[in-house]
Image (cartoon, rainbow, N blue to C red; front, side, top):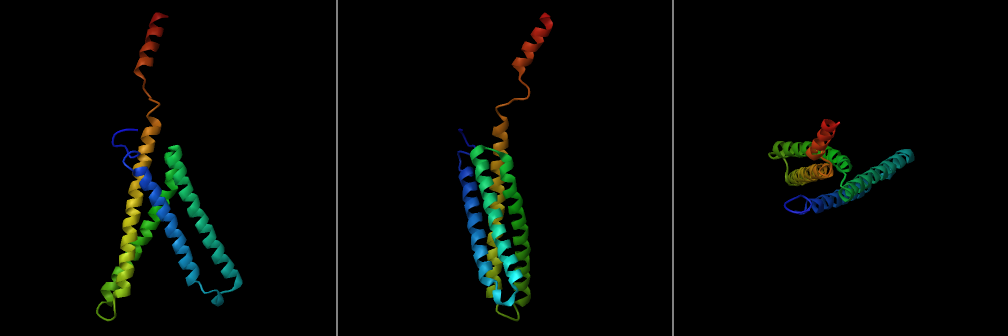
Length: 171
């Protein structure tokens, strides 16, 4: 692979880094979710359901990153699709939360201290930027894999068509 292909200019490495960052963010958010959950205020059934849900979500995220890495290794474009869908959902959530905290900053600026709301706003703006970069890198690499996976099988081979015509004419 030569030239300025995504494989040589670091897009594959960038997608792997994005996948690792995604997994780190999901682990951090799960730890924060565990820390914020007050088990004493909930029944045993709710606690079990909550922690099983967190575990299942974490396993789903691990599976998504595993598929993305396998897609890079095997050059299979459809393995990147679960990450792109998940990243789009995260992007939508971050945009909505950025809008909510922006409204909090605007409406509470005259009455209260806005530093905590402003901090949350910037966190979600940064996360929004991360998801935009993640989606664009994953899509770029997915499109690259689609191109190279079909480059070895041409649909119209002119030499074979000419030979077939010669055979038909000679018969």
